[in-house]
Amino acid sequence: MSSINPNDLSARFLLAQQLLKSGHPEEALAEFTQVFQADPNNEEALLERVKLLHWKGRYKEALDDLEKAHTQYPQKWQTAVMLAYLLAASPQYDLRDGARALSLAQLVYAATGSLEHGVLVGLALSELGRCSEAAEWQRKLIAAAEEQRKDDLIAKLKADLQRYEKAQSCRPAGVSSRKDSLPPGKNP
Image (cartoon, rainbow, N blue to C red):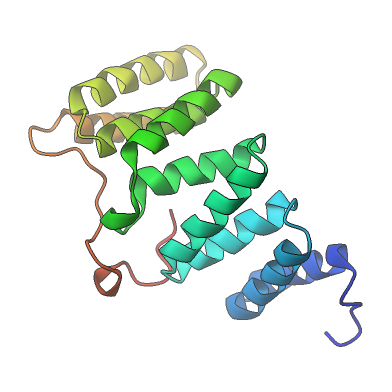
């Protein structure tokens, strides 16, 4: 590691990826952090950092990074997608904001038309407790996925639909405080 120029962000990013692949998430997080701090416009470094923070159960820090990046670079749709996801389904209930998640998810879906991004709309609706709307939205996504022959996505959409159709709350599972949160290793 000492042979890497600390100012070569591309090399640091590649090093972080290799560290992650070789089972050194702490070291990878440190490298992704350095790259992101030196270049806040580096969306890949941000997203990798956020994934690692989430994996470690540092949800607030992950959300704060996404919020800051989205404010600075609102045109970066992958950041908006990840932000919408965490606002709708953070393992910590107190970090969620279903209304904001829905707004972001609808913007991303309108811009891309991607079924995968449409899933976020249903997730945000469920976080808001709007289960019947989430179910209806999911049925539309299922029909579109069947038309497009996206068999891998259909199973997930149908599983989500079952959750949305249940009589009890369809809100994504979570916990009320950090000490009760999921152990590291539970990725979104």
